[in-house]
Image (cartoon, rainbow, N blue to C red):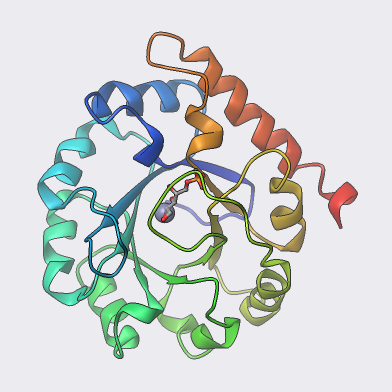
Length: 231
Ligand code: DX5
Ligand code: ZN
């Protein structure tokens, strides 16, 4: 998985048909997504419950690109090995989920995955300032985590601050929540390279009409690339 800062679209399967994950993943990849984003929720750190390691392991053979697993769980450490075994490429934990996030990120890397750290909307950029050597991705939440389809919160200043902090380090900035063709230019111009989108990718389509997913992915990508207009 070589590093680059080109725009990557990562559909969140939280907005897919829960009875048909394999076909949904194959459809979004065939339609040109870059990564597949998997939202793990525990009903404790966030007020919603999705899936755990056995489900993620079952998704693995369908994901040919990058399996980007976003943990919204606390605690994190007891489950790291299970997500390594499930085949996660990137494993992201929330900075708010543990007082020992540095140790958690080291453990994720030690288990052979790329460590990501996520920031809730209320958490400042400075929370990750001393984590840059132990992280490969910073996920900026632009909604309060827990549900798809929420309204985008403007975190442009935080993204710019993180981009400055990162400098030349090979660290991705991922944006998660409310990304669509209207909001994508703002986050891309501020310095984000990975755009997670759930409802804006799956809206209007199905595995029987996958071309809609392709249109939606292309619309977000094209909007993100018009960054001059949003700056
Ligand atoms: C929110 C999740 C997101 C969410 C994005 O807790 O982490 O990945 O599914 O969904 P949309 O794009 O619909 O806001
Ligand atoms: Zn997510």
